[in-house]
Amino acid sequence: MSTKRISDAMEKALNDQMTREAFQAQVYLSYASWAEVNSFSGIANFLYKHMNEEREHMFKILKYINDRGGETKIEAIGAPPENPSDIKDCLEKILQHEVDNSAEIDKLVNQAHEEKDWATFSFTQWFVKEQIEEESLINGLLDKYTLASEQKEGNANYYELDKDLNKAPQSAEIPREEKL
Image (tube, rainbow, N blue to C red; front, side, top):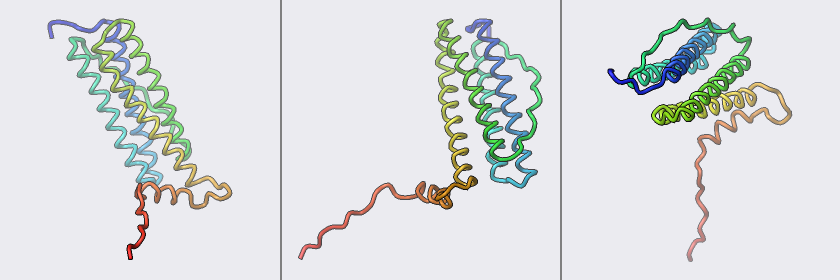
């Protein structure tokens, strides 16, 4: 592209975020493998899917940089952290990664606003929404884990009840008076 429509500073910031997304994918890959080796196939499947989602985020940023006339810089990705100690630790670590990533997305939004780079500001809004969804999803999984695993008086069946209520109809038939 002959015309660059992005500042050097924004180009660097987006490249840095692209590398963070690649790192996030590595974390999900590492934790998915850990889960699979420890016979948590459902959790492994969930994490493998999220690994692919993070790679899609990385590619979305790469294409945006290129489409705005910038140049992507493919950097080395750091090694993922140590394996989690258990499922709760895994979910808590994932949540922290998502919270940290949200903070970095917020920095991009702020930078785009300060530069009056409305195209990038608009582009980053998708990531803001995505991070809200990701944090909410992982928080929900932590809540389910707590219901399923922690012994508290009276919660023996809360996890099953929650699953049932999730599928329950949202309306009920009202009995009608019989006409004689």
